[in-house]
Amino acid sequence: MKRYQVVGIGNAIVDVLTRSDDSFLDHMGIQKGIMQLVERDRAEVLYGAMEGRVQAPGGSVANSLAGLGNLGLRTAFIGRVHDDALGRFYADAMAEDGTDFVNPPVAGGELPTSRSMIFVSPDGERSMNTYLGISAELGPDDVPEEVAAEAELVFLEGYLFDKDKGKEAFIRTARTCRAAGGKAGIAISDPFCVERHRGDFLTLIEHEMDYVIGNEAEIRSLFQNDDLEADLAAVAAICPLVVCTRSGDGVTIVRDGVRTDVPVTKITPVDATGAGDQFAAGFLYGLVTGRDMAVAGRMGCAAAGEVISHMGPRPEADLRQIFRDNGLI
Image (cartoon, rainbow, N blue to C red):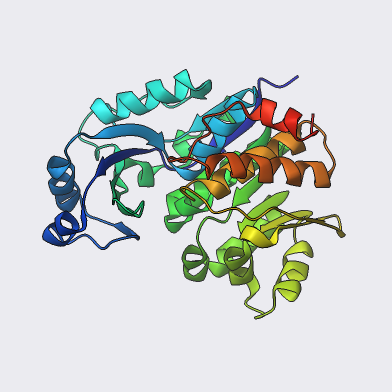
């Protein structure tokens, strides 16, 4: 038995939340309802302007690991934080959620810990201003081979693909895991990232990945056939397992050429943040515990349904109990 069932690698970002009205957003020059990247100086101004800050560990794959921890799996996270207050908070919070944070906070003159300043309006809209900081500098030297080799599955975050060091870290993690008998996969994360690095993305998926998870826009961005069915077929031709979430239209899974469609019940979300992250958590739970694709897809949908029923990107209820209530375990 391997030490870890799932090891994730991705951005270690502290979510810093506060409530604010539209006049404050206008005064601070914040665009409402979108995520935008900001530089360090702007991040410090926004952070200083936040009153009643609430902090939570974030990052896409890290959110998925929190869901997997909720489900009782053995997990670890590879990521970079600085040895500052936010970095120590992040490392401790991941450990409290049951995930081993395997990279010690970095001391010295490095960039500060990454953070996303999130301003929540009275109408529930979230305006996110993300400073990538030290997490974007993650590279192959940050990948402990003994961790990657001890994973049944590794899960990579597409957001890290923008830098060559991130690509090298991906490849080292995937190859180490697969050489030891595990499987590697990726969350595409962002169609715009695919557009910037399409050739490298496709090479990674074809030669290094055992599974890929993305929403419709992300899957369609890989081959740009302007037809979802054609795009699914093209991705499935180069990767053994493709998972495409289509919001209220359900989930399509293609494994070794066999297609499974999983319907969903449409509901109005309280907060859609983290829906894809928790779908991945539920699906990977099903995958690593040997469920068939229909059940794994339904697990993903159930986990996503829980997280969109409340504020925040991580589950608040017992996902295993939700799975039991739905006849999944």
